[in-house]
Amino acid sequence: MATVKRLMIHIDEELCTGCGNCVPSCAEGALKIIDGKAKVVSESFCDGLGACLGECPEGALTLKEVETIPFDESAANENLRKTRLATQDVNCAGSERYTYSQEDTAVHEGSSHLLPETTLNPKQSELAQWPIKLKLLSSQHPALREASVLVVADCAALAYTSMHDDFLKGKAVILACPKFEDYQPNLMKLTEMFRVNKVKDISVVHMEVPCCHGLVRIVAQAILNTGTNIPLRVFEIGVKGNIKTVS
Image 1 (tube, one colour):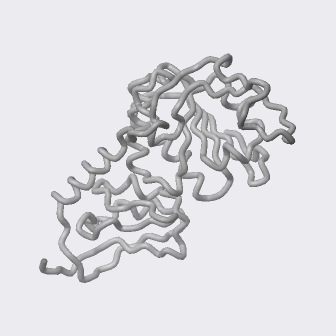
Image 2 (image 1 turned 180 degrees about the vertical axis):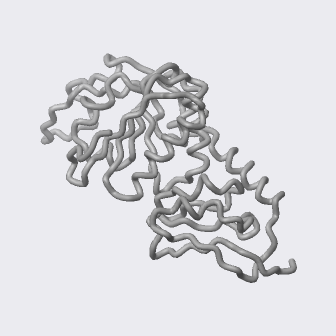
């Protein structure tokens, strides 16, 4: 293929924190978060217009004139189509739909998986559905219908010790990582979830680290995409497991 000299997005990986803010602004799907950094998936997908430039809080994105392959609109559209297909439920045991009551989650004394010398004081789980991972959770899951939804960053679920008591009770749960998952597919899926299920309100629990703020942004953008005014509350968890801010 003949090369041309044209503008292309350039990413300074030393400045990039992997927050994912740039990804949804690229209508061609040329950007993804890979190994914690923004990457150009294919130079043929980038139109060089720079719509993503203003979305980077670190100034890691610039336009540079380089010798490269031409922009291929058909290839970019096919990339977007494949990305949408990738958001469909994965066929594994964890993708089976379940809703259950608290009685179903009771821990029975003498369970064979517990070590004899282990002393446990199990509390009642407040988790009321399965699956919980965003990539496995169907947008048609009955637990989401007119529900209060809790969107939790993976690390926050372990960092905050009272997650079940303080956040999970009475909510449908969505678990995601904004750093190691693709922003655009997640944005599309969350938008569909919020819209078709007419969710009542949404809470986001994320870590204080910079990349984790991408989870707040994607949820806020998904709400905006629905064209409705779904109430949103945001809780930031410190690395020591404390609640740092509430908004």
